[in-house]
Image (cartoon, rainbow, N blue to C red; front, side, top):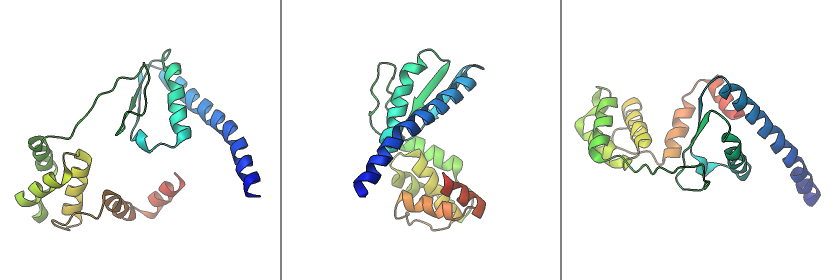
Length: 171
């Protein structure tokens, strides 16, 4: 029974993939026909194999469209003659400090010591820096870092209204 179920799921996978690919290409065709369009897909290192295959299948299709596809990833998993790779390293400490100073709120948690701690703890990752500033200033946890970025995001999601969490559950 298990082998039959796996075989049945695999047989259904290709038509589902073809349908999804056609729907996405039709949508991008429609939008890009109105003018130049930019599509950003972030964190492609987390994509499942079918999504990776779909994106790689888009590349030849893009040759004839007014569409710029931007992929962000921690690695160079997508190799194609149409792709240019731009390595973005961590923010230097002075740039991180400028970002932190500009984004911090003038409450008790945004002391110079707290900002310096957030800059050091972020390791030049601007998103993590922003989350540390929010975590420290909004939640008032001071200098204690979250157990992980995942834990920090889970706490933020938990604070969302019920309807928003339901939408995330569907996605």
